[in-house]
Picture (tube, rainbow, N blue to C red):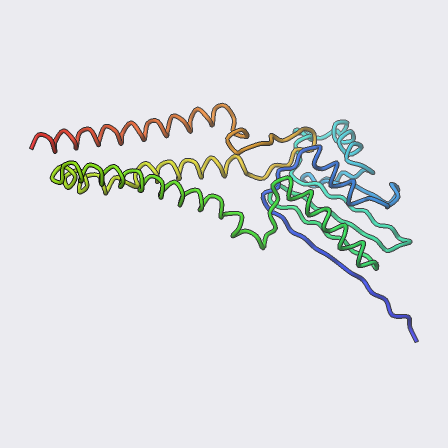
Length: 253
């Protein structure tokens, strides 16, 4: 009669991770916690060559000394493999520029679930989103669009209501003219802001440096900020010009 065994495995897949050296060090430290350094390996695949070392620092040093073309500090993937043969504990972190996969296995379910929860917390702090949470990841942009649209419509509608109360004929003229323009500036701003927000939140893997933190506006480069403001100002300028032209035509009647 064989002795029954059990094995617990937890696999988490994240998108939109922005990982710099500090984040990688913390994630790898948690994943390999309690496992001897001799049983931990960090590797990267570059073209047809695989580089492997005992730690991320050693891997970066070996890349810097490697006789290979290109910038070896700019990696598109990195993998941590930590396994304790005596206890059966195992953790594998696979990272590329599109997603991060964390796999924790072991006979001790408490340890597996606990390690998985700690890794999830760290990866989420780096902007990572579980693939099953894609809808919730898009919700902030959608909610922003709704709020901006609603505030703009209420502001203009309130102004038209006041104008209609003062002068019904003028209110009707302006209402018929400006209602089609209500969503113009909102749509412009939301489209431009969404594009640059996605740009600021794009996945990043930077093994030899840090990634910017803070709001999406703070993470944009100076050039992106200038272009964003220029587009918004130009759009508002066109809208104001159209409104002034329409108003002049209305008053001239």
